Length: 166
Image (tube, rainbow, N blue to C red; front, side, top):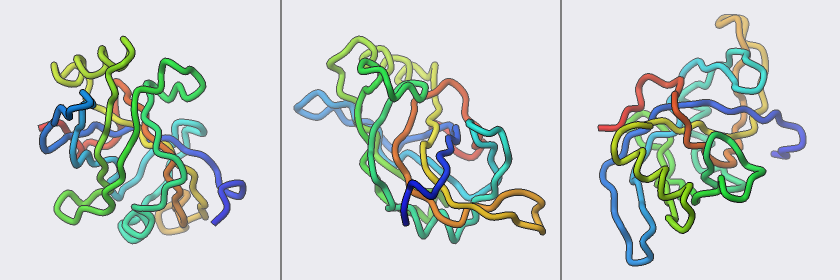
């Protein structure tokens, strides 16, 4: 798999977590956040629909090249990088790829993001990934054949209605 031959896509999904833990380093951890369920989603770049089958999502759940966590997909601004993602793989119970989100509250942006999440004012992540795709005649849309995850953006609204903060 070569990401130069893949296209980059962004999918926004609300997230939930089992519990939050404040570690000795003061890192805020949101555990077992579902970041991608099988389904049909619109790509944030091209605005075209693509089908993500359970088999493909499950197969590539641990296929990551980067693991950044940023605000609003703002990957090019230093102060928007607020932490990192620890991939956990496929979770059959949630029917989703899950990960732990680690936010390091050393900048005001990171502290504000934690406060917004904890007060349930924002509840979504948007997965950043590269995909190889092909046309699916039956679904009349693109179908993801390979996935290479690169990171997550904390966003206001997500597109996956099955991932909610509990």
